[in-house]
Amino acid sequence: MEPDVYHIPVLLHPSLEGLDIKRDGTYVDVTLGGGGHSRALLAQLGTGGRLFSFDQDADAIEKCERQRETTDAKWTLVRSNFRYLRNWMRYYEVDGVDGILADLGVSSHHLDEASRGFSFRADAPLDMRMNQSATMSAAEVVNRYSAEQLTSVFRLYGELHQASRLATAIVKARSTAPIETTFQLAQVLTPLVGRDREKKDLARAFQALRIEVNGEMEALRSMLTAAVDLLRPGGRLVVISYHSLEDRLVKNLMRAGNVDGEVEQDVFGHSQAPFRLIGKPITAGEEEIRCNPRSRSARLRVAEKI
Image: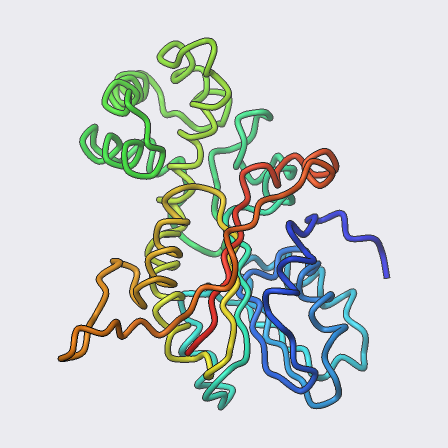
């Protein structure tokens, strides 16, 4: 089997420990990527265990199909957005699982593959679609959204205080010619970000567009909500997030049982939250950050279904 350079699994060992894997259990990795987490999880399953791995990117599925051992009958690859987790488990007649793992955000492959248009560091068409059969690309958002819509995207998903100015600059630039590449977009935005924060603010702007293109927050809400019902008592939810928007939803769900963070109580005022937190949030150590700089912003949370 070839080395896994497609995507370096972040916080691999803490993730597996958090799942508290049972050899004959049923598990779901909703973010297959390069398959690093999935293969490590699979190695701990016995003959009665099952693993379902989701990814909406055909490249990820095809790569893992090529690498998968013929004896891995207990490993099912699902080419789908994890927002449809509940539907696919019903399709496979799975009524409960022992663990769900999610490594959110964009994979190393997406960032390193210039032609996918996820990064401002290489010139490429403004694409950013994780599912390449999807219809809406980043170019369509940039060239068709109104100034108000773009402002909302940059403010909500990029948490950029200059969101309105960025949106206005885009609308002005595209009135002369469409903005079709990553470098063209970066050229429009760069004069409006502070020189000392240029890379960080450009990264946030590109992040905001990526989240909008792929409907990431809506998908995360759907997946987390489904996880509450799918996990068996004692089952573990393990989530690695990379920015505050994702982490807020995850934290809300684990503490309150819903993504809005509203704790339900019984008639006696006792919390009805379906999870108990396992340990404190985990971040990458110095050695992992040195080997994989993209792990720097990772935050892992673990909760157990009561």
